[in-house]
Image (cartoon, rainbow, N blue to C red; front, side, top):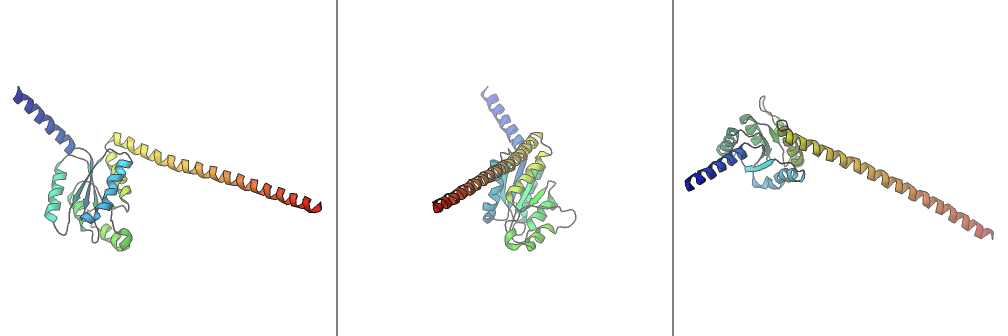
Length: 211
């Protein structure tokens, strides 16, 4: 009886692990730990926007340890999980190209030093050979949202969350417009009152002088 209970517990854990391995996720690959403050904005956005998507972080380098990079990618690609990779690496961006050339899932590059290096950095990321597609997004929050939208193509529940997010963004704009119009109306009323008070004050002064 005890042995049967132990087996049941083990089987349930294995099934839970299998479900977790097959869950949709965003895998953020950073070139070094110095990129983590920038990279953490991906996970922060997912939480703040209430998207139930798992986000994992790995440190990998196409220059300094390609064996580790390929081993990590093999582990992800062997699973049945729907994955979007977000690559965050400074300077020469070999990481994005190697990942895109190796995996079957989409790759979004989000350079942390784009503002510093400008077009040179853009070319380092986008000039990939045919058959090695890398999408470039400048902000981690937008990279996260783009990844969620990709995952939502095969997940109707997540698609509903995306629709809810878009509706919230519409509401933010609509509310901002209403607030601005109300503020402008109050400002016009204030200016109108000031003009009336100024005119009445001028008339009062004229009457006083005549007296």
